[in-house]
Image: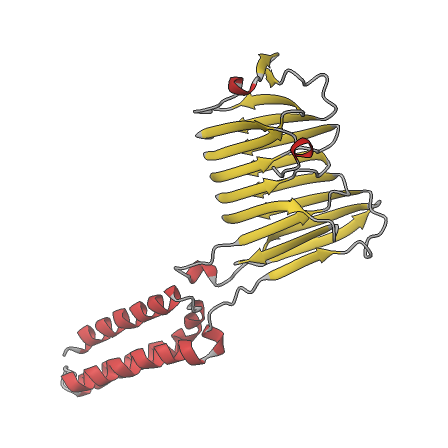
Length: 306
């Protein structure tokens, strides 16, 4: 076997082995650190091939291939630097005792692709569970206002990984505080249940995906701004809540009129908007394939959850 053909074949085999181990979750980017060692070894093999009069015996070629491929696999399996990144579940809990005199809360959350759910909690001011990708958290109190910042941790192994874990984040907020929420996401599958949480303002910037937003019991006047890309958006609100919808963008399907929302002064308004004790003002700048506004009975009247 000619040395050049042997080295080319060996290189492709090693490259395939690295990608295969990478697909199993092992960190392959550390192999870059071995390049100063791999280069001289290839030169040695090329020199041996020349000493063998320009050919490498088939048996020796097979042994060398097994040796190099086996050593590469062994490095991934034995060396802890190559071990798969363990994305254990992490938690965040903000106790009442830590910030006993809060009067309001502000959440700033940035999120890429994955699954995201919101809910309510009574045991903490806020709590969260992060799976698949940890979060970088920032917690501070300013003038009795809780400032909570959440964003994904940078994963240095991801650019070299062909199989990536799917992040799943669950966030719960206390209904004992009025909240300002700013949420920016990529391609996300979301279920945001903000029922019973007082809202001063909710600002959502969504990429592609499917999002369900459940509202109700959010205070006397709640402002909800949503800017969304090509996605499916489903908004659920009780019938006894006054609803106003300002729509801007290209929407392929809506059902505004089906639920008694009347177009008045460039807004779709429910017939009880002026008399309702609680109102929600929706400002939608969207380019979605499907927008649904779902009106359901007030859970307080039925004893059920939204």
